[in-house]
Length: 122
Image (cartoon, rainbow, N blue to C red; front, side, top):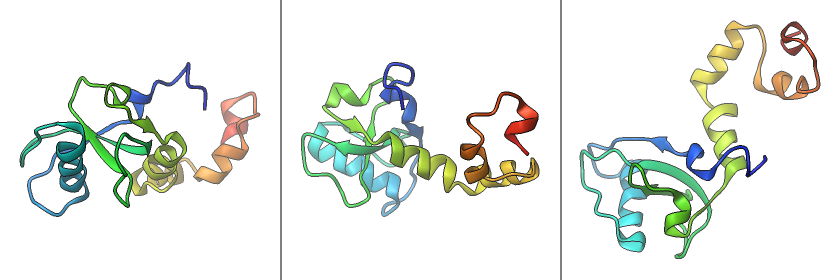
């Protein structure tokens, strides 16, 4: 994944949280404790899968930053491969879209060297 073409901030997923205990809530509370953010119930931060951060990462490696901030402003290195795997390859909604086109994630990846859209999905 080319760091110059896809910036870290593009791997964030806006995710609101309305109750305690969700992954978004836990990510926000980790960021409140370690990054100095002030998230509270009802907020909608950007959630990232982190490769490294200035403090020990939570087990699920999800951290939250304020909308408009970038992960590197907080010393976070985004795990791009984990993000792609979670948000696309393992995503039920994305799998359904690919299924409607008669393909799946593995076939798409193996078709990267094709020259036409028809070859991509065949």
